[in-house]
Image 1 (cartoon, rainbow, N blue to C red):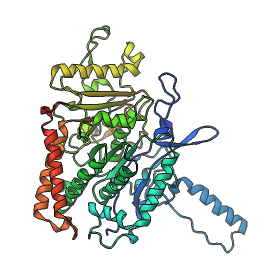
Image 2 (image 1 turned 45 degrees about the vertical axis):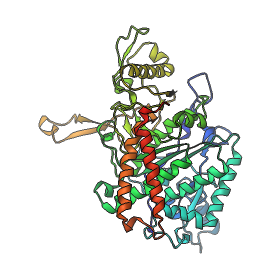
Image 3 (image 1 turned 90 degrees about the vertical axis):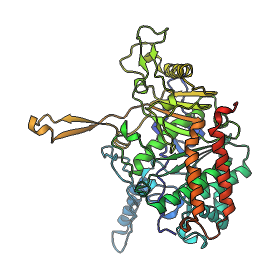
Length: 544
């Protein structure tokens, strides 16, 4: 086993309570419904929301979080106060006290002046803003793992074996899961987030297999993530092969237990640094995680808001026949103009007030694909869901659109899609648009750095300006657009994955094989991926 398995860069940054504001539409209490994914602890003044989640990781990776889900940083002051009171009562004589300090580099939530945009965090719990429920954390003790694991302890099949051979761990997570489900008034389904670059992909497969057996009628949407690796970037062959081996097995296995499977990776963000995040540090897991989590938080608003849609309807609208793999893209537009949508005549509201770009939305250069190997090319999709949070209407506009921006943003995007249908092969069978007026709230000192505007120092002379240029971060926008689509674009992901995995299995590289590896299982994976790739590649010949 490795001494420490670093958690993936894909960490869900749990929504802050202040993100649940009163609705701007229909005077509803909440526009985004926190009760879908959170449990509410009512207090005298307000409600505190705790994620309803099961979280698996090594005990050594919990950082400043206890096995009971409590953040040490949230309780350290009260603990110190208790120790001080004990010392005061004893007179300070003959009493030795040992005060625990936070492990890692957790955020200081109370100090709003600290700029975390360039900080490097050691543990995923350093990101956290809230305690978890006592049932949430399923910690894996590396000292009690089966002795038959691979030498690296980080292969897909290792994860399956951990749950298969560790009865106490399996019983604990299944018991905690059952108790959480009993709390739900109406169980819609499951959201799953998995680091598929290692044994966690295998463990996720085992857990989803259990969900399929026990709750087979409930839909499951799974986001499978691989982190950015400098070793992959520098073409370290052994690391590349291990990642290929693990992620390919995960895609084939997890997708069969999921209603919708969405692969995500920050390894292939070739264009994201060229726009909003041109100061993004790819080695900083905190920054890449923030972008991914924000995109997912927005994309899932379809079934987490007061729209009358469920998780089941979300999955059914995206899947077509047996094709259930989707892509995810996102953008942070400060205005509609960033998408190429421009006002044609501000005084001509009833007669095409906007001009639209000829490219369909999913190939708009403003969008960044978080699904690997996908580029902004024009291929017709057959199902898509567009989610927008905040109202990216031009501030200088004084027309009816800005006065009723909630509905007008949706109308503008609908007009863009209709225009695209008439002027290209873009013709999705199903399009759903979910627009939330509540702004996309981020802490400007904690979210990844946006564009930097160069400013001349007022005290600089002309001779000094070139060498002394002050940098000022742009204010982060309060709008975000996420786009999930199912269509032939996914073939761009499946084809290289299938080809490279086939070559790897032929070479029988011992570094990515366990001693008990079954060659026939890899042949079945190749056959399954080939079948999926053919279905997506020939999708234009199908009548959906």
